[in-house]
Length: 624
Image (cartoon, rainbow, N blue to C red):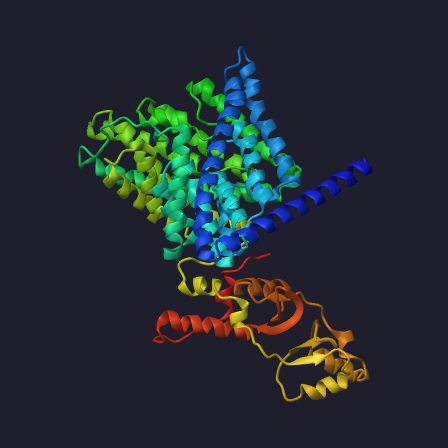
């Protein structure tokens, strides 16, 4: 066994060395052929659009094949065997997925959108190949393909963003351009998953980037278009849902019920969000079950609910995305009893599938829940106002967008994605009224969107996108804010001599260097004074230092504040990335406040007084 492990490790080392050599050769070639990084980014955008389209199609087909092989066969089994199989398949899928998530690819958990947001805002566009692409692909196929009530769209975004990030890292792009590549991959993933390139652009701007960045827009558009072309070339030029023609606002009196649908969608969205976050917190604190078995609980609950739906309602839709059943609702072919029951069953199944630690998204479930809710309002429209039953599908269509807007909080995308997924534009006014009502009410009652709330549960706090100061500070590098000529002490200096040297300064902590001017650590004035008082004035300063991990000049200022928060420090040494022992500066909390003040001056045009404090910065950092 030991020999085989050594052989495996040796083989991995050999493989990595070969990859590095190949990458180096390719990088040299690309630099020789395309010396301009801007042109390299454009070329990589084209490659990323094609690769992401192919990856999304492969993921789609793998999910479809696995679901047909396992879930569909389980539900179609004869006798009472179908009950056992329908419950067992998602439960076993949850066990396998949980084991892989616990011991192999823990970063592949969840929908994938929060991971992409963190990579864009904090990690400079860097995503790991194993967890972001390969791991997410396999885990998504295992869990969604075996029936977990989750969607393919979020994982597709993470897979494609990871591919684009890999291309950028292989090409040695700068941090800013690597972030651009990440947004390119995210847009391509949405475009291919929903067959909706326009909505992909708006979603990337609304949810990933956070504002309209002109430097990102062209690449995002190109990649989304290419990915959609690839998807349509393989899977066909058709909308995700087949919606009967003729849907539109035929009677103005229905607008009242569309507005009421928006209100109901807001409360359903809040119930979904609060329940998911609460149950997820409970699972995180659960000590009875090992962590790797918890996704099986979600699979078990989903399987039981799927059996209930089949036995009671004679319909599916509880497992996976439920697109086929949703198409029936859009065609007005489900009764109000089935619509309301599926709305509740799908909500519960999705909450358990996601909160228990599954790998899958909430896009498709939110559309499903909204479609069922909207269809029920269609029956209400018919009962109260006497309108024809054709309005049921129209209300289901509007409900999809309204609940999506209330949960995901991407109002523009929620309108466009319904248009592109269904190919119909006749309901623009009801859709906008219901979507904006749901979005506005849900945001007022719960300001924090679901993806940021999920990150906060995991100890990560992103910058507040509605605060220009926070956004600007996220773009400042440590090298632009640090003190470039700090006061330093030599390690061999005695305590007495050091105190004499710093007597003219008023700092609390000082950097200590060795004879070769390499960083040794930090020492405080208080510690030097204590040593002198104890009679150890001849002791060397180097023996008293506190070891501290330095920060790099090209890192964002937010990351340094994270380090200060974690270590309760207020000074950090700054070094160059290629020379980690050569000191180039010192970053203090005063430097952070000054940088904050400069940004405030630029943002306010020097017309308003500046109030800068550490609390403003703390809201935009990752909490351990």
